[in-house]
Length: 317
Image (cartoon, rainbow, N blue to C red; front, side, top):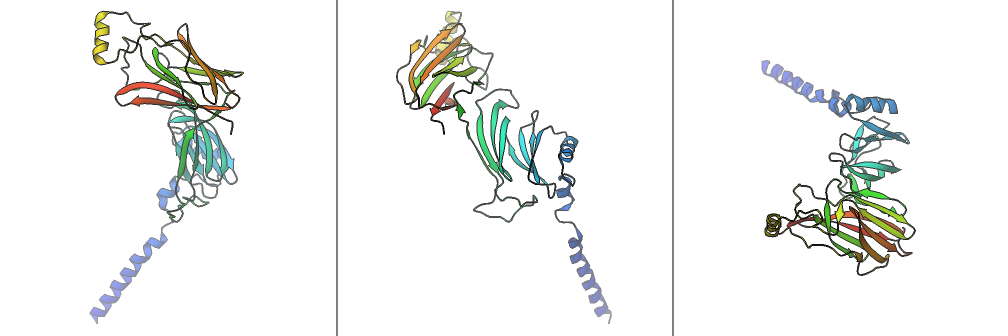
């Protein structure tokens, strides 16, 4: 008899232990703590981020949801806040500030960066990107069922094609550089830079000089500040310095010739370089086919820190 009573008691204990987890809320307290309190409004969103010490730059409503832009002291980011639940999901985190953006549909944003790195203030040429959660979450912000063919965050960051009338400024200021090479390519122009003789690139981050791009009529001008055709222009010319540079392999050719560059392409009919005080000017005479341009920063290879710019042109798309 005692054996039966003991068995019944054990079964009751097991039943009680099995039923306990059903009483806990879905998602748990940790999941709810990250959500914006309901009803979701712009004021409630700003209050939630400010309580965390995050700087909200803009809140853009879209249907029942909201897009939140964060920065600039911290890494620039875009969050999607679901109006039905208040759940926040990170869409994008980048290194450059966001200049503008457009919501294509719920959870999908196309944006353009301003090129300014948040941690160094170095300015690159802008880039264009599109980000989407692509079925990773449902309309309330909860994780959707896994789909190996469609679910998951997608992000694409590529070149930004600016109209010719849009000026640009990018590169590193406060350091003198020399033009080592300039060439007309299949669809644009490449400029290779190096240190002035006696002023090696000692920083871990080597970049092209400060460059301004402006187009007037069919002439595009690239002004490279603190840049010289003659890499010896600022050197004192002490024999020991020249010998050291020669041994290190960093003594570059004495000067790059000014005047017209060889070659042309579909978008450039003529290119020429000239020294104008402490700046270098590169003038491109454009054809009627040229409508947009983009710029990328490259390096010759791991054994050479020489940075170069690649300017590309195309028709207006």
